Length: 177
Image (cartoon, rainbow, N blue to C red):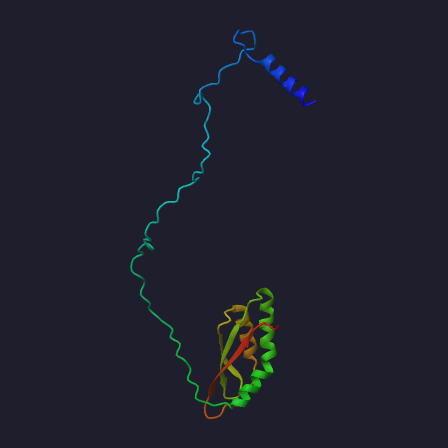
């Protein structure tokens, strides 16, 4: 059977081969490579050019700044009173769940959130909170605002020896396992 295929292939070749007599069909010559045909380069070439960096010229000169005529200066309050350390610890412990709840809400949005929340309070003569500052390594403004709102309502024992007492309470915030 293989011999039959070979003979058929040789016969087909001979039948279509040009014997030079010109009896067969004419074959047109291929046009030259540049005859209106767009040549494509297969090498990768950049599609855009990245310009060299230029030095930053800064903001334009807007002239001289206007002179300030009035300025508000906030002087830090000096608190010379005292609070018992055990009373401070007791208030911190009583409110730690609320502080933790502020953190847990933010933890749902960012499960890697952790750090310290430092609450600095100015406690008035009667034990009420007069001023609150919140900061720390946690760096989440929503947690800080939540803790600030809570701390405004905290109640301490009366301050001794002055008009107010400065209190700093750190809270360590880490996700629970």
